[in-house]
Amino acid sequence: MTKKKIRAPVFDDIVFEYRNKEYGAYRLRKNYNRNVIIALFISVVIMAAAIIMPYLNAKALESGQKQTERQVEIEMENLDQPNETVVPPPPPPPPPQDVVQQARYVPPVVVDSIKPEEAQQLMTADEAQVEVRNEEVVEFVEEVKEEVQEEEPEPEPFVVVEEMPMFPGGDAELLKYIAEHTNYPEVAKENNIQGRVIVRFCVTSKGGVNQVSVLKGVDPELDAEAVRVVNSLPPFKPGKQGGKPVPVWYMVPITFTLK
Image (tube, rainbow, N blue to C red; front, side, top):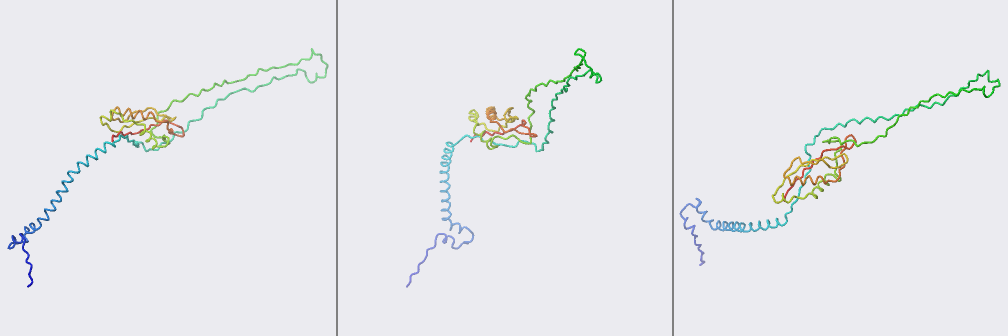
């Protein structure tokens, strides 16, 4: 006789034998073990993250502090440059040429006082008379003064010209020069002072830099450093208006940032 295996009912089946199993409590009790395992796993993951994350943050902060470098960022912006077309001024009139007036030299006229009908008669040396008329010659000579070319005064700087000034190598080289020659002031570093300094200067008709001033400052130390770097710029290619070199205003924003 084959023995039939009789499966013993579980505790939940015994409890809900004569009850409505579709109500919901039966399923909750049946999935209880699985839910407990999932909750335990999630708790372990959260605890592990709470323990490991502070350690990782501390290591990242320590490595970041070792590799911190203080840098200066330079930005070039077009600050309120008018877009109006500039009409070139008319060319200056040519200088008047100095005219030297000189009268033509008139040679003296020799007049023979002997008439033609008397030329055949024999005359002695005393009788022969020759009248020499020496007319006065007037010579007009205008004294020409040697002109001394005096250096013309520098006109007022232009804001926009037909050909703007150019740093040797372009704007990229200008940014590179300022970045390499700017020293972040120690006082500003200690006080964590940052900001953007806008410097205005004039590029003269010969390409030099003068009239350096701060349009918008942040701190006296940062302002002074920005003015120092701009004063040390090498000569520019001067701007031109009507084909002639002229002084032009130029602006450079310099951003000091601690990283």
